[in-house]
Amino acid sequence: MKILAFIPARSGSETVGMKNMLRLDGTPLVGWSLKAACQSDVFDSVVVSTDHEAIKDYCESNHTKVTVVERP
Image (tube, rainbow, N blue to C red):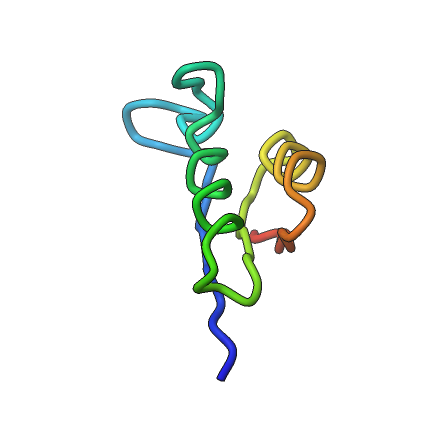
């Protein structure tokens, strides 16, 4: 059986816009989730769903095991 990690990373938020790209200790918030999922031996693949080009570019350029799916 294959196990997929799915990380939703929307750009919109009612209170904090683009919060997934806000940096915590130099790394965007979405980066912490990606790093944990990619380094885990549990997942066979990691998929990020996003609606913003900056999040997509970050995920694709910094994590080789990640597939990005653009959402409407």
